[in-house]
Image (cartoon, rainbow, N blue to C red; front, side):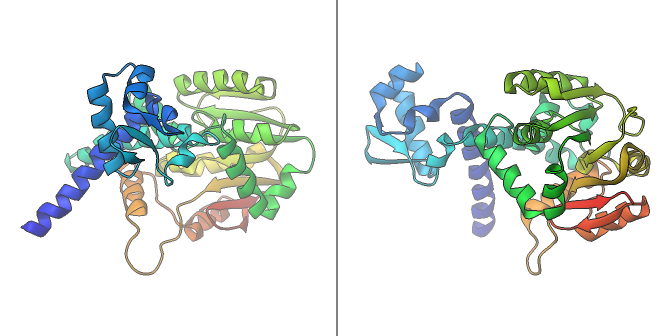
Length: 324
């Protein structure tokens, strides 16, 4: 019983600390702690009473977020100091909001119908899932991560460097991937397609703010039926959001949209490693399959693409396939 209590207590504590960190990020509380600051000054800057500020700081220190050599003065710990660099605070805020929504979905696993489907979520919850599953395009962190990802995949980098490139993303959500890529490649033009019009409204606003609105268009519609008069050089397929029943038609449409020699790019879950099950992959797989989305491995996705007529050319966390 003691071991059970300890195990459940650790899970409960982690959930509470994640909620505390999420609040510290979304409120801007942590932005005041890049350098050491006193409790009274921190209370003045945040508008929170000194007593609660002190209690918050003690709890954040216990979680490893803050360091202190004096009970009245605090600073971000070495581990968490990067949160104030390159937009990491935005990235992790998105991830923690995503986790908060997923927590409710995991609780619903034990009902006969299972968790709410992605398309049935409220606008805010769907946006939280989308943001936590995508790049934060306003951040240098997102730009660097995508730049590095492209450099690791020669066929992808060569295609983007070919000159004027037209790309379409099927299931673009908030458009984080496209908007980040557009900033890195000034000769790229793009279309984002998604069923959720509310997400596309946010994507358009982000495109304006990032100065790339003239090179991207967002279309509310079904990825299986989207058409365009000109062929695309590249199709991005956000396959984690496509249930099994939609996948054959989506890939057939992706094939039609691509010019011969064009690339399809799709993310995939990491391959299972030998030894203990990766808990993050296990949780991701649980939710995907509850949404009727196959949790495919690299090999399985490559086989799926080959069945649709594509020729897989690259493997890894991102799978690339070419239209013959």
